[in-house]
Image (tube, rainbow, N blue to C red):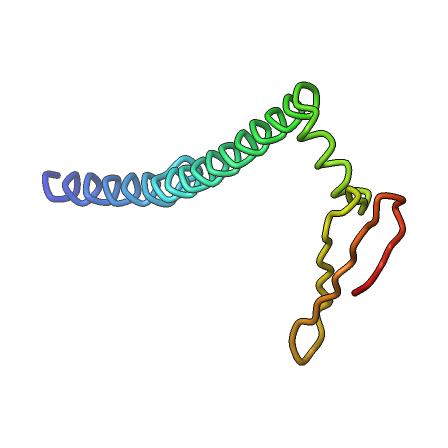
Length: 111
């Protein structure tokens, strides 16, 4: 009976080991969940960083008139009188640039 119970104990220990390693709550599943958790943490940090950047931009747009003016001109493609605007066109052979000058009457001239 001693030998038979030893075999049963070994078999049970082997099954328990397999369950611990490969079961639905086993070590491999735990490792996979830990990797997913770390990926979500990285994504969360990136989103928090983006939120902070956008909050800073909102604050600057509300409080800083120079930032608001520059941002508006950039988004609308406008420029101040006398300001030189460089327009870059990407071409397959390289990059070319055009220079546009705005006069005080807001007329566009190309040199």
